[in-house]
Amino acid sequence: MTAFPRTRRPRLEGRSWVDLAVLSAATVALRIPAFVSERHLTFDDGVYGASAVAMRAGGLPFRDVFSSQGPLFLPLVFAADTLGLRRADSPRLLSVLAGVLLVSVTYLAGRAVTDRAGALLAAGLVSVTGSVLWVTGPIASDGVALAFATLTVMLALRWRHDITTRRAAWLGLGVSATISVKALLAPVVVPVALVLLARRRLLPILVGAATTLGSHLLLWLPWGPSTVWDQSYSYHLEVATEHSPGANLLKVVSTMGDRDVVVVAAVLLMVGALVLHRRVAPAAGEPRLPAPDTLLLGWLAATVLVLLTESPLWRPHISQLIPALALLAARHRPPLPALALTAVLVVPYHVAHVWEVLHPTAYSVRSDQTLAILRAMPAGALAMSDDPGIVWRAGRLTPPDLVDASILRIESGDLTSASIARAAANPGVCAVVVRSSVRWGSFEDLPGRLAAEGFEVALGDGRGSRVYLSSACRSG
Image (tube, rainbow, N blue to C red; front, side, top):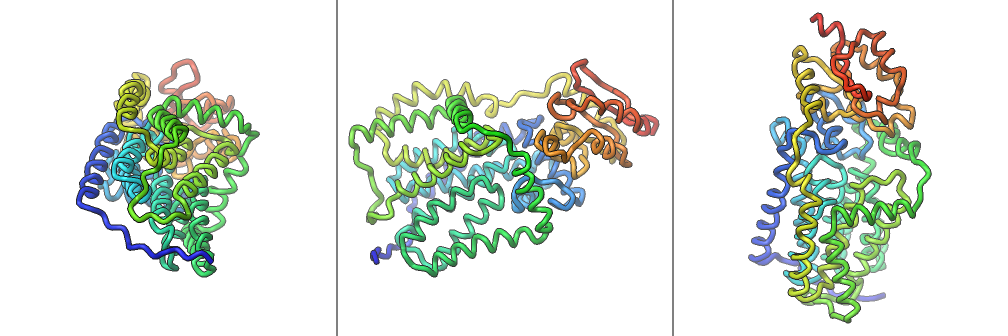
């Protein structure tokens, strides 16, 4: 049995606290424009904003409010919304806090495997890169789960030679929190398993596994295990389509080339440094095994495998690659002059390609007209849409089962023109907004069904985008 020396618990120096404060302030500043944006910035931003409003009205996750994410996510959205005093933008507080946590634990992970400059570089890359900005500004489950995953990996890196039973339990809780928000980030289990197995002690392994599974399943109980399974797991399996690892790889490459050129440049510099046989700057007193590179590469490889086989693969999923790449690039970084020159070359391109999330534009004229119609409805009136964010930003409540009107629910048969018309016929629903030709606009019989329920077109653009108002609400 290999004997690893026990190490002292790492303590933060005064400069580290200053670093964390500056990084946190910069992270928040970069996300303020997205936080206060008057329009919903992504489809998910709108879905979860509408979900928060539905929970304000008493809807429960899974039981009332449809959720395709893990059992921890919507409760966190509710908590952030409450912390933000339930104002229009309050649900986005969760993403901003996730961004601060993600950047902070990336810095702490960097301090565990390289020097202060490397830790600052890794955290800085994570803070500014586009894939992370898009999931830690607008509301997204990806950013929250990634923050938990990176926190777990940071603990694994710092404790890798001194795993106790209690620490194994904490690692298990980290894995559980990650997959309880978004199961797609399950690759975090790889570095944790490598650390636990390296000790060759059965008890910490069993405790880590039991804590992960037990705490994860415990989160199912308040909402009903069968309901959680149907919406968070079975639903995704049912809508999985034929996938091509090659097509997914192209999406990863194109997304990173568009949103993450600063990380791509840092990785290329890392490769150059390795080719030139640069030595890694290890943390003081760092034992040899298990090597940080092994843990980071294991995490990265498992994530790449999941992304290449995921169906469908969405651009926000690419954010999962960023922390591991940033830490590896910082650990094997070239001299400062090379980094400075590269920054001069790539930063203008990067800013131009992430400007949409750094400086969100306002709604279009047509969207403003839709908002005006929704806001003019009687007090307490509900509205439903295949783009729920427009209802959220109008300050209206969406029926809780329709907060997610994604195309995947249509493909699974969970949403049909008949079910939409039935929902519209419920008392209190005054408007139906169709904004997408591939979602509710794809139902050719929906206009007739809505007309039969007393809805009339109040606004249309001739291309299938329409606002239907109930005749009962008009007369009321």
